[in-house]
Image (cartoon, rainbow, N blue to C red):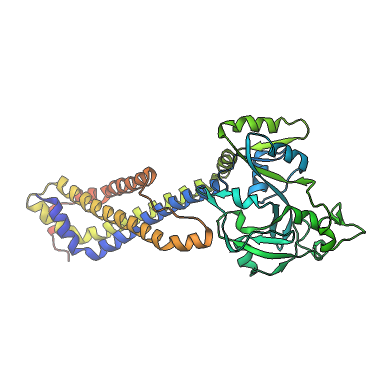
Length: 418
């Protein structure tokens, strides 16, 4: 008895309900794979916020706190790093480059970061991607600024506009540096990182707006922008700095030298290791996504089971006829299992096609809006395991209608119901 041919012919007579079942399975598989893709891309995006940076150095603090304020612009530093200390480590022969950063000011809810043009040369994100000035140019003058993509879009700024930086993280009239406006000279391309929500100015610019401020307030003697430019604007302190080494094999040696520096309490962290540790602390999100995936699978399987059970009554006579012409009970159960297998495999194939189709369509838009490049790759081991689990679970679930069909007698199917 050719069960495959019987299963295919039987499916043709019930194609409407089976197509709906296949569609349900396809949606479930697409959601499962989509959630897994989002989970992995979120983790990858977090871990790739900063790359090609060997060390992040700041005042003595916990690694997570140093990472949060220096990379994600969350929170504040416990203390500053003196300019002399920064120069000391920048001149070490093991150090290839350094990028100083100064935080503490804001503009309309966005963090302001003082740095040098080396920031645009050496900062990397994602898979070693450099920062790109999408419009305009890098800052060159003291009162020039380069905006992150989100800052320019949300505040509707363009090249040539003037902005006022506020002292501290709360924009208020009494804290604004109104007498020293900055001119927008560039806008960075979207990166999908905190860079997009940062206002970038020079270290000299940060010093210039604070020359007439003391202890968090304006001093009795005020200086305008022209007067500030006449002063020595070399920083006295910075918030942190990024370090790239000549040889990565010397990373731990340099890290130990910084952590043990006797003149000033310092902390040096490995961004990759600290990012991974930070992800583990927020792994609850990952677990929630896994739970959602499990519920999606359960809903899909219950939908399939409901469909099979709803059609089982319609197939009483069909099954009874098969039994009467010599089909064994095991043949009937195998037929149900085979039909289920065909439906689930078709649903899985359709679900994979749906995921890849959505990836192809959404990839340009996501890259443009978030800077995240959705990699279109073959299914990995985890996703193949998901597919195998869906198929296996569906086969197990199909045993329920198979057993029901097995226990029904021939007379039950052939008898006329009045």
